[in-house]
Length: 238
Image 1 (cartoon, rainbow, N blue to C red):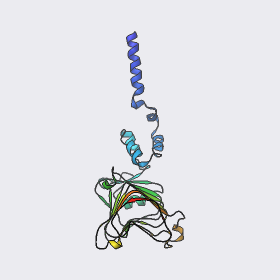
Image 2: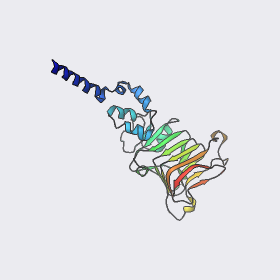
Image 3: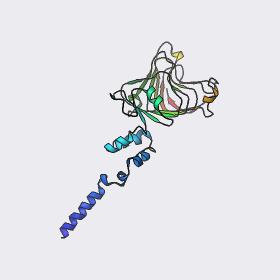
Image 4: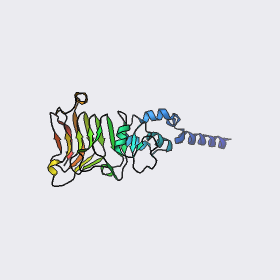
C-alpha cells in the first residue's frame, strides 16, 4: 500500500509540473492574444512564437501584426502581403508590419499617413533590406508618427527616408546612400517638417526625428532638415 501511495504522489507531481497543465494554457485564444498584444513585437512577441504551435499561431495572428513575405505563394492568408506598399495600404493606425528577412524589398515613394511600426524580421538589421531605386525621391515618406527598427534602407539616388510630419523614430537601423558622382544630391534622411509645404490638415505640432543605435552611410550629410525642425536624441554612427 505504501509503495502504491508513493507512486500516486509521484504521478501527481509530474502531472502538476507538466507545461501542458500550466495555468496560462488554460486561457482561451482571445485572452492569450490580448496578453501578447502588450509585448514588444521584437524580441518578446517574436520569441513567444517559438514556444509551441498554438502560441506561434496566436503570436503571428494578423490582429497583432501584418507580414510582408515574398516567399509566400498563397496570399489569401489574412495579414500576409507580397510587398510593403500593399501592407501599408491595408494596415490600420497603430499596426505593426513585420518585413521578412532575406532578399530585398523594393520601395518607391511609399507614403505612410497613419501611425505604424515597421520592423525587420531578421536578428540583425542587415538581414532585412529595403531598396529605393534610382528615379524615386525616397523609399518611405512619413506623414504621421511612425517607428522604424531593425531594418536596412538603401537608396541609389535621393534619400532613404523622407519625413514630412509627425514623430519619426529610427532605432537600430542601417541607412545607406550608394556612392556615386552625384552624392551631393543624396541624404539618408530628409525632413521638410516645419517648412510650410504641407496642407494644414497634415501638419503636426509634435514634429521630430529621433535616431538611435543607427549606422548612416553616404550622402552629402546624414540628415537634411528645413524649417525649424531639430533632431532629437541623435545617436548615430557615420
